[in-house]
Image (tube, rainbow, N blue to C red; front, side):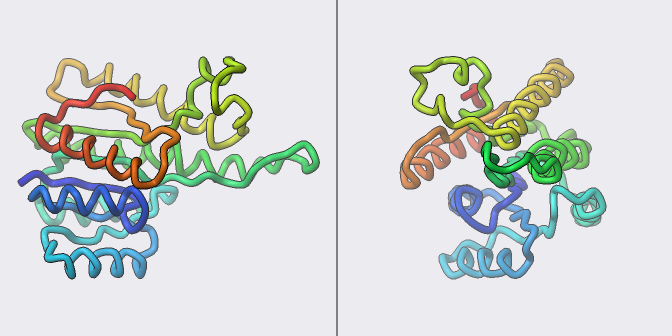
Length: 221
């Protein structure tokens, strides 16, 4: 049984990911900012007979919350085998008719970039205790600067001042972190579900989970 922490696990892809990994026999910590929503998610999983998991209250944009979550994890004397940084926000859309609100941009970066960095750095000591530690940062096709320059790209017009750039920064951090730990037994990657329909995204996640839990190896998306 491998120990897994998933942020943003109370709904959407994070929830489906937790469900699949629990079905595969892993012990999953559901990282949730909203504890009530987290309780409901855990209850729903338990109704399916999945009891190999627990909540970990954590707001990845809040440094004190991240520190408290890491301390709670440490009190349990746990090693961490897989960290999946799934939590993220889209933020408000900017347009030419409204002035740019820098606070909106900062809010997105606080979660999507700085929050992920804080979580990763806080839980690295526990990942070091694993024989095959894996970190997967959920990114987006919108992070690709190369694709954004291609007029024929299907998402060419989907430009943003906050979300896309926050994921571009996340990709850069992931590359730097993977290089830093290249001589250790770490597997550190970015993954993206791509622009797929919801059920296909869930299937993609399930295939990704199988790779993570079985081999710890995952290619860049």
